[in-house]
Length: 348
Ligand code: ADP
Ligand code: MG
Image (tube, rainbow, N blue to C red; front, side, top):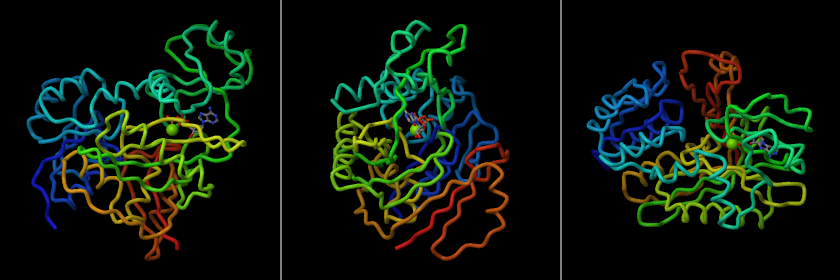
């Protein structure tokens, strides 16, 4: 059924943007993508594509004038620009949220203030700060900003491992957790405060990159309930509108620890496209465009496999069964470990 004639602006042109465009189409919304990548794959899925650096105010104004609502598919957009846009157009999630989550230090402070457990961590601005936090070794040094897919991270086994002679950035040092499992919870919160939660998803990483997501997660009832409660508490305290993801670690003592928050749709939620009647993308659009909330029902268990780098060649040649759904992100350049596509397999 056709629901809306709104035009949705999306900042960022990666695969998450493409999948938002696909959902928007189903809801009879038009999409405009703004991206600083000339080759952004989402240009194959949107109605209009604007190529611009994120600090080009002339282009940003052009973008704003084309759309009714603005959202984003990645969190590292300069806050100044988000604030500029939100003064002129409805922009969701609110930039205030982005400001907290863009920086690992303020993100963790926010989570800890809610009395939610994270890995033990410390803010690191100098070599001395590492010496003063020896108790966190072995640990992972992470840049406070701009990290993704394990980029900007370095494992420190002991003090000798840290060879950088000077600091060019701010970091946090996190204790290395002996991970038993990783799960994520995708949650959508609507303008009226209503919440729609997906069941916890079990995630497997390799070299700090997500390679597989599975539902149902193999976890006990207590962790199941606790993870949904934590996601709800975070979304409510952020006053969040849209879809977001909370990534969790489960350690060997069955402690549930928040790893990080993604203020956007998330890779681990790709399986929601096929396994639920309302995907994380559709839910996001319904929330930010203030459309009707649709009852969401799980239709199948599922597993999602990320297709990385050169693997895409093999997948492009395969034929698939009717319970298998292959998505090619149509990226022009194949790079080692780059997310090129994914396959979701429904299995009951
Ligand atoms: P990104 O922003 O790149 O997703 P994350 O902090 O989520 O960064 O780290 C990526 C992955 O690296 C995690 O999903 C996990 O597998 C591993 N990892 C990160 N921090 C830790 C930690 N403190 N202990 C153990 N593994 C970790
Ligand atoms: Mg992560």
